[in-house]
Image (cartoon, rainbow, N blue to C red):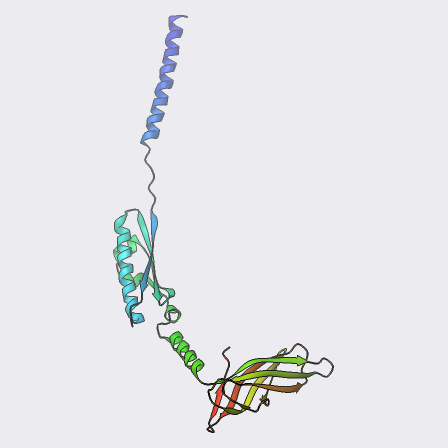
Length: 248
């Protein structure tokens, strides 16, 4: 091999090695690209005894403000904070406020109310006004009242005569003897509702805990009709009247 050819091969080898070395160095020093992101925070509050809705909203604003500030302070890459605050009122849970604000917006106006969305329907959903509690108490009181209740009611229809036969029974739960027990019912046939009443006749007077039976007929009723009891009325032994309505 000539001296000239040997020098050329060594020069090419050195060039390739140098180029590879530069490439490796270039890859090593390439910086990672930092990406901004949204910090998402979910918070929950328990309602304190007799705490008003307005008071818990103020508490929610306070913890939401702290969460927003903490989000921006914890990482410079956080460019937006998103906070949702839910409330738990005796097992009823619903969001009451949410906040979504960018770092620049918060820096210019660090007022939590400026960036807060309020869920007005949550007051009712969480039953802060005690409507559900009041209704439950009313149902409890009604259930505890002395009453005559319906046990069952059925309807049989005749396709030839279009006459419906209604049968059923009641039980005296008043603790006293009652009489003139009147059953008010409605027959539902398609879109038509036809109301009527009948009296318990077997027997006509019911002692405490005793069952009574009633039967009635109604004309012009198509097959497939159904029947519901609207209410029951009766006369107590002392001459006073009573009534009962089934819970739908």
